[in-house]
Image 1 (cartoon, rainbow, N blue to C red):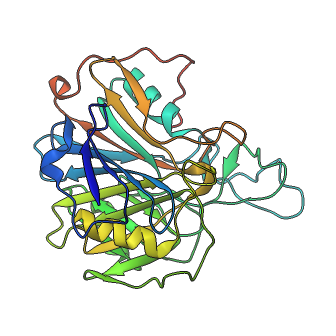
Image 2 (cartoon, rainbow, N blue to C red):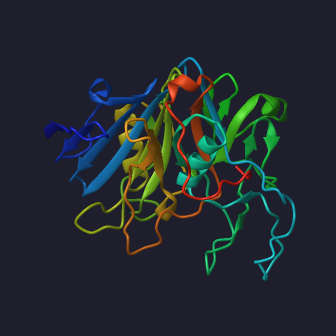
Length: 313
């Protein structure tokens, strides 16, 4: 496997070959305190463009937030006619989620999409979303779902877990909890099988180190011939294992997959991954999570959003 270090904003790029056994995070650029990014280009088992961020959850001043309840939470969606569906969140792009938080004084430096949602039916333009499992923001339940499924949970003390269950007694201490599709790695062991499960697609996944210190964020581009064909569950697990994760969860993918960072040099947000311009471009998603600093000096100057901000974060 040939190795090269890119002089781009996303610091390191692995060119050629398959997924390495481990990634060298010391070669990655630190774009914010405790946050490093890597860009991996692989050609085995297929063309794959992979974007990773490692977040040190023990970084002083680091905080996490996410998408909360819509202003009309609990009302019936007016644009769903074939069944009754209650409103959980307002769909919006992950980029606008970060921009609007910064416009309102939150020094957000990183944002990524999280959960799948409904309704998923033509014309796919519903303003609101309903989440499939329990979701929590700052101790408040965001989802009307009664079931509890696989989720990423980060508590107010920045302790994080990938779990299938969350006790009611723990809800007040939860900063964010958002559901995903499936847990794909436990204790360093990949639970997904090569070539089985969902077809190749753009993907978003999270991993946690065994000691819980590092959160690994992975976004894979897909459905772009000659550029990046996408990943399956086995690919995600192997990439996150190489990054240093012991546990991992597959989140929402496809056109939802979006990784946005604040570029202090440019004074604006940048989206690392690339969607095919011929498809829907940077989809409005049901929920995103974002990382920010309590100390304003950590994040640099605020930007001015290109569109009017909304209070429905």
